[in-house]
Image 1 (cartoon, rainbow, N blue to C red):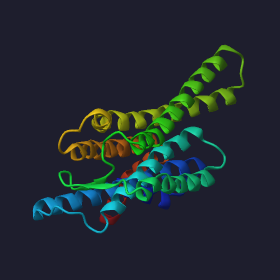
Image 2: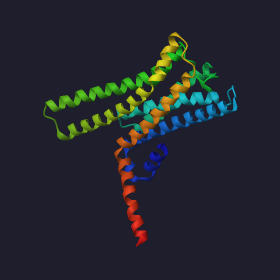
Image 3: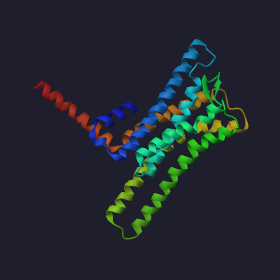
Image 4: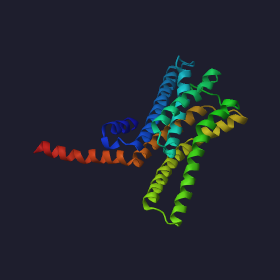
Length: 258
């Protein structure tokens, strides 16, 4: 679905707009995150079938890139909510920040191989990185999006109470609609990320259950599917492009028969 979305954006000129830059970045970040998770799943399946209980050469790299792409995905939605004039520069800075953010995990050799889960991840126990990761990946971007959403709601309500230019009001309403859609996307991550959140907090006080990473990643992978479906639904230019392509096919068939 991510590849289809990206192909439509690249080939359809109606999608070559400034707002679509941020949406395409979210799609690309989600696609990158999915690729890493798919690689992790293949490795886990292979080791399970072959009964291999040691890490491969790229295990720590997959763990590192998992943190990088997760960071980039969450902040891509935060950038959509901000909606500034410097989209391209902020996108580049966000990706640079993502690679820098995950450096402490490698520098401190904190990423460990879990035999039960067949994955290289930060162990879930109370530590500086166990607080550092949720703070930067979830708490900051999600609270930022919710703050912008609430401010926009208040702003639109105040504008409705007083005499305001129609264009200004419509623009504010469009921005509110866009941010509300981002809140829905983030909510999907939060709801299906509950198992991982529970295991993280359990790790602060006791040992999480066996196969905790397998369970958590399964729900995260499912959330990515629903987020991608919602992204198709909410992105009007892409949805319009798909509709045109579908409606165009019967005409081609008729012309061929004639």
